Every structure is written in C-alpha cells, then in structure tokens.
Length: 123
Image (cartoon, rainbow, N blue to C red; front, side, top):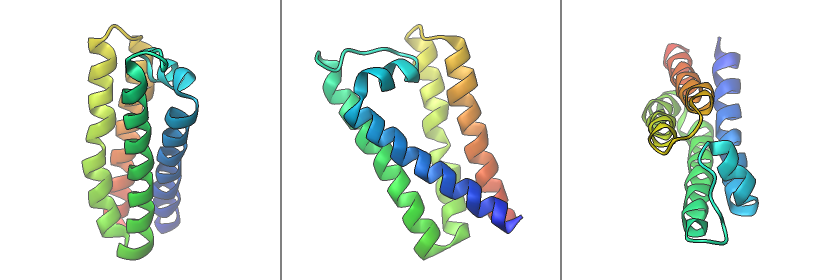
C-alpha cells in the first residue's frame, strides 16, 4: 500500500504542475478543458495566469512535502487541497459549464485526491 500511496500522491502533484504549465502556456485550450471557456487575450487572461500559477505552486508544494516532510504532511496537504477541485466543480456548474466536466473531472479529482490522502494516512 505504501508504493500505491506514494505513486498516487506523486502523480497528483505532477498533474498539478502540468495544469499550471498548461494554463500559463496554453490558456485557451486549458480553460475550455476546465469547463468554462475564456479568451486569454481578453479580461480573462490574468485570471488564467493566476490559475496556472496556483496549480503549479500546489504541485511543487506537494512534491516538496512528500520529499522532505513525509507522508503524513502530504496526507494533510492532500486533504486540504481537495477543496480546490470541489470548488472548481461548483464554479463550472455556476457558470453554465457542462455537468459532465464538473462531475466527471473536478468532482472525480476531488475524490481521487481524498483517496490519496486516505492512503497516505493509512500507510
């Protein structure tokens, strides 16, 4: 179970880094995939960059905790960070985005992050 816990946590942290890169470097497709399309050349450009910075930073913090503070610290981090995809679910729904994206991507991600936290706590 330890290998699974560390592998899932690492994969989720790396995925956050990927999302950060995508929102910073390819904001239009990233926003469309998020469920609420936005024009990066318009007013939304700054917000897409903020999202990219946030996601990238969360990935780095997660990797640093896993490497230097251990599984328990990473577990608490994951438990807290699960709030982000839960709120993303509500944001997509509130702004008329597809329910399939809200639940199939964001809500499912929150469940996976909480599963990761549980595995890390149990290890």
